[in-house]
Length: 108
Length: 253
Image (cartoon, rainbow over all chains, first blue to last red):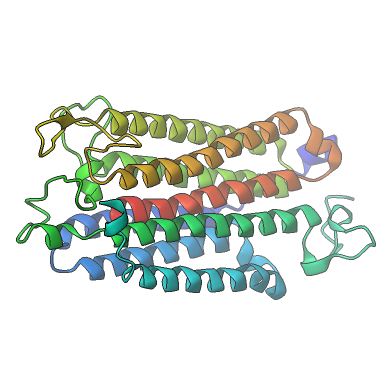
């Protein structure tokens, strides 16, 4: 085995991985631009919306390409993605409820 | 012979019983299931964070007419992250909002790509390449952890001027009971969530060192496959993924 591997050393195929790296870097840089260029006093929720959207795009690239979930079988993908969709629903639902909670009477 | 990719089900990926559910090795599938459970844990933190943060009034509700430019810290409302995290090592007194955390994000993304390169080298059974990329990944993990240690230290010690309360006392830094940057809950959640993530990174670095050690000793070479690199790689990418979310919800929003 050992003598085989030195002779049949395959060339690395990493172009698509580096591409994802640059995409992630560009998205993070873009987040900084949004953080400092958009007026938070007037467009607070627009900003938050952009940040959440870009976070999900980055998550898609990390999970799909770096973790190779994109190249697994369909049933594998749904085993992972379906529970996460329900969890996202739970998070959104609880955060919306959080607006009506009025925690200040407990903490301040 | 083992180099040929003729078999759809490589022997080391067969489960006991000779089948291969979801066309994945048992260990890899179980790593995914573990990561799914970790998603639940971090989602719980995210919900807690959001709920408590929304429970406080915003600064414009407390002080009429205050904008992001005229913002000042108070115990009454949640702070703006870019006003809190603006220190960089060796540059005392220079205000560079979010720059240091940007560097930390870059380091973690970079260590993620070196990890995936190690996994790719593992698929080619290229021992030297796996070693090289694992070393870069370990280095990235250490730099990230030390950066976080510095950031925590700075956060705990606070600014030079501190925050003067209504009764005339001045408080410095973020502690669990008292916090110059805002409500104590802000510091508590910061320590808890970034701490839990940092603990994940720490475990990841240990696993990476183990993989590097085993690779160097030729254990995977002897075994005939580098699936362990792939499994630990999944964990490491997940840690990076969590940081992407922490970065958004703690530092940007």
